[in-house]
Amino acid sequence: MNENIDSVPRETRRDQMASVLAKYPGVDSDELADLLHWFKKEASALDVGLIASDPTLKAPYEAIKKDHIDRLNGADLFWVAMLVGGGFIALAVLIWSAL
Image 1 (cartoon, rainbow, N blue to C red):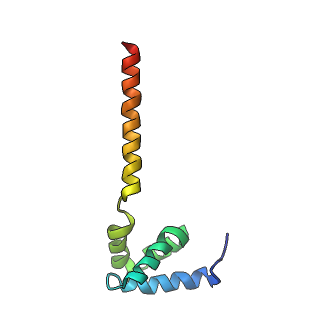
Image 2: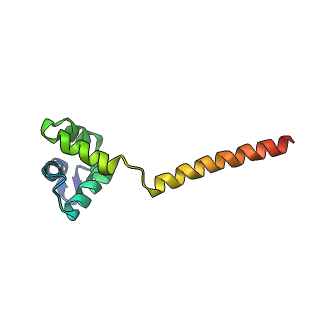
C-alpha cells in the first residue's frame, strides 16, 4: 500500500486532518473540502479508526460524520430508485407473462 500521498507521509497527513477536524465546525470551505476528500478518498480504515477513537476528537468527528459523511447524496438516491424501479419492472413482467 502506498505510504505517501503527494509526498506527505500518511501519519503526517492524518495529524494535519486531526488538527483541522478539531476546529470543526469553525473551518473554512477549503479546509472542509480537504477534510471531506481525506475522509472519502485518502484515509484508510486505520486512519479513520485512530481519529474516531481519539477522545478529544469525538464530538467534531461525530458532527462531521452526521453532517457530511453519512448523508445520502443524489447519486445514492438515483441508484436506489433504479434498483426499486428495476424490481417493479421485473415483477410486472413476471405477472404479465403468467397471465
